[in-house]
Length: 104
Image 1 (tube, rainbow, N blue to C red):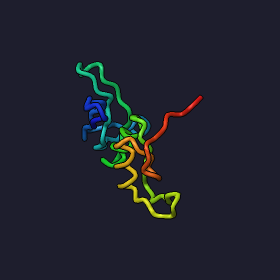
Image 2: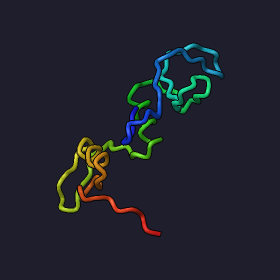
Image 3: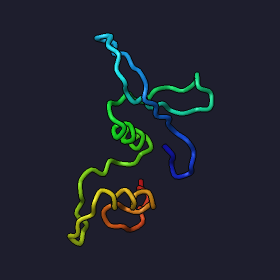
């Protein structure tokens, strides 16, 4: 998965995993924090579905999950796809206006 600056942050592999409690073997998606040296990578999460693995990457990058339509201030409905597109463009997901940094 790539972030805005096009740097690789995660590696997703569909591979064999063994549950510690039951010792059963399962095929799962493993999400690793990516670094150049393979032996220095560390796991973020194991998931049953690819969509869960992608959501875990997005959350780790700071992008919220946009799963349901939102209501804009003018009463219009903003679909999850529109919300994601606005977030990636640096806009507020609900209003479409530029996000302002939090003031302390």
